[in-house]
Image (cartoon, rainbow, N blue to C red; front, side, top):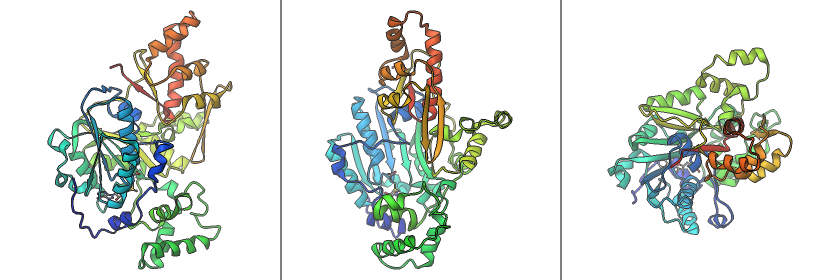
Length: 423
Ligand SMILES: C[S@@+](CC[C@H](N)C(=O)[O-])C[C@H]1O[C@@H](n2cnc3c(N)ncnc32)[C@H](O)[C@@H]1O
């Protein structure tokens, strides 16, 4: 499947010159890159309301798949989960990016991944099988829509490709955490947009060396893509032909204009000021805010959110992520090694995390160690309770569930624990 991409869009030219993010297919032997959106545990929790049947047919699209992170992660996780009729389709208009993603898939021997070259604005032209058979059950579009000339047209194109009960995981830039980026982009445009990509990178490096200590990019310690990701990282951050950022409120409006409904941002703790405000008078006022207002408040309060990752479904789809209210549920770890997490909690009774400089300190219940040692993404809470009750017959189901709920509230907020309903 391939469309002859005859585009004079500078964003297209940029990703042919500098595929992003930079990836070496040889690294597939060492690690799987995981993250949000599109970790399978998150997709099941948010988009499918915790329902997941590995025998069902599942069609996923990764739109603007770049060098392959989401497509590889999802395809690998679906293969590991034994999903025989699940297929991931990667679409990008950059052939150079596709070549890297294909080499990564080959290094892993993934047979459930298809590749197409073309624009996400013209998916119909690609002859994708899923479009003729009901649409995609899941669509990932991470770090792409904010680069389009008309992001609304991009989201509308993806919404049109979605199955009625399907959902999407999206990521767009956020303004406050990117403090300093846009003034430096303007400086570089001011110095001239002529020259080859390599010449422009060289000029940008000269400017970076001359930034005074007062410059906001210099003063933003959490914005380091241009420092740690080589020429592609520098180009993507500071020489990008086109990018824009969305506040929480703008994300809500963007989603609504496409006829979609926002299920939630992830990790949720970043969007809930009550996780790090302690003053009782402020907390009382915060109790009056709905989720959208609380998230907008958190964005302005923390000031460090560089991008928003979130899940959406069609506005008529009433699906809801599961509440931790039944022993039949299966807790599923995401983006974390639970044994390592258990060690970091130790006997303190507190889980700590620092996200782009923002510290979280959350109390965890007495049974945390025992729970973390038994959560494996397969065992239900009922099975875990039976195991613990065999050692401590006084541990009632109700007391156990209460302990789990306390743990889940905080680990889910940090994006580390999801829920699945029984098959
Ligand atoms: C910043 S990269 C993100 C890659 C990937 N989604 C990730 O998160 O690692 C943006 C990608 O979107 C692709 N892209 C931008 N506009 C596109 C369009 N209209 N159609 C298809 N791909 C597009 C670019 O070629 C590039 O590979």
